Length: 223
Image 1: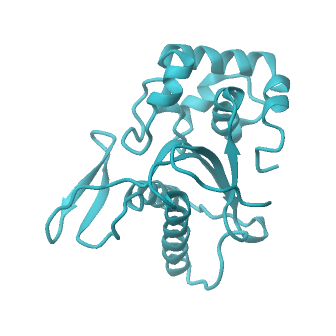
Image 2: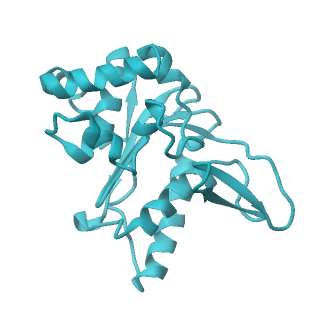
């Protein structure tokens, strides 16, 4: 898949899977590490003087001071994410020059180093470089978030499956605090008309099938 030209202010569907379609998340610790990395590596500066962690009481990513604290300066906005055992999906908006490529390089390298060390393995973890598709039409912004969020339960008609799936930004989009500090949700919620309408749309798509969605995102997904 040919890489798009990445530009500030533009939105992309970014995805990748494990090499040979192997699992890249084995247990909860791996999922948490990747979500932690989504937050930690989204910065113009290298991560060196402080450590971010998830506060399970608040549901937020917080900073633990090590050698002083510096404010983060994000290079992308993470609009949507879903993690599956052998792949991931992201919707990113670039906000700094080369932000998408730099963020994905840091994310891929950092997580691979963690995974290889934990499981005593060597070599590539992901199936080549990340894949990305430039999103340009409003229907992409409407249908693709549902495709990404419903990925763990493709074919399900129950919205509760999506709500209970922890490794996704969907709960935060309907006001159920999950990992709220990782994503920037205002852009999509403005399109849908708020958290309530976002939930209504999801239930409607689950109830009536995904034929319309599939027509509008053909060529923009992992399959």
